[in-house]
Length: 448
Image (cartoon, rainbow, N blue to C red; front, side):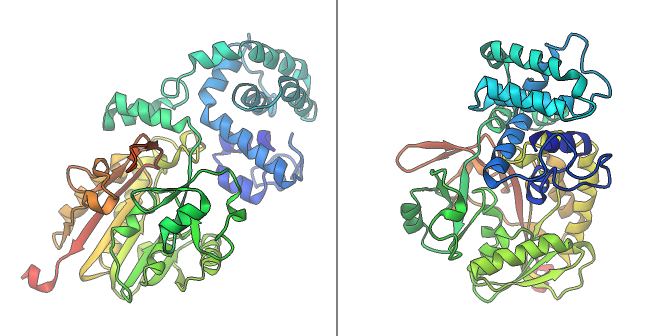
């Protein structure tokens, strides 16, 4: 299954989450040349095997540059043409040998078996065996020369982040992407008590960082809907609205609903809007588990006709480069020309969202992107177009005292390389990359 997933991700830019939620290898797509389930992976996997396949795929994507280099150096004539899933099979084997706790013989044998089961990779089964055995023998040397920035980050992202943040910070971002991310949760209420009950760490922002490896569905409070999984950085934009009970809020591009849940738990009257039916169904299921009352509306945010609200949250579609540590496929499925295309969509959505804010109301715009065109530059252009809006600066106190997350202009900018100091002096690392700006619409009196 891991080889099927890698083939689809690297060959067709399909998403890691989408594949494993729908079952890679179990059904075909319009682009498949073979019948569903005919690839090198099995057609049905039990939960344990599925979890292992996902772990292999994730590790391979996180260190894809290192794996490709190691394989390439051991293929004298390069990757054979028309060799089917050969590259994916080699990547799966190399990931197990170099990055996961899988015995060498098991990783090599499995890869050879996969090659023999793929009609076009079959002639190269012996080559798979030879290459992977050489990688196993050279494991220490390969890992010693691996670099998360120079090797495991696509060149266009290296250049972008170096331009935006300086090379030193760009290298720290890449290093963060190479580490296993933590699991953070947001609770409805009484975070200190839940942190103690779950054995987690209460972060200064109010999120709880889990320390146990227990599946979240088996933890206390999940079934009762007391909390939900949400990265600590992703939990910040909704807090910036500072909604009061009874206020009306439009949550635009709302699915899967983490921010929706925050707003509803604060007592706001929330209308969650998303254009994708499947995503909206997932949001509804999440709200049902959390026992939160939310109005769900399937609509295109760019043409939404709705009464103005006290507060509007626009979590705009973006490149998602701030989430690469959780979704390493993003680094390899996005392209440079995606950024201006997405920025154009954000431009249009922001302009429409502005008209959905009451006079005197607040608009929070956010993206999980590291790219300035989707963040700082987007808001600068918006404010130039909309003189009836002004930036309402974010303070360190609103972010649990994490002043490093506040930009010079008073916006939120978190980086995957950010550190989180705790009261006892402990320093934690790991946040998704987020940008958010809080914009206040002038009242008629202020305009006059």
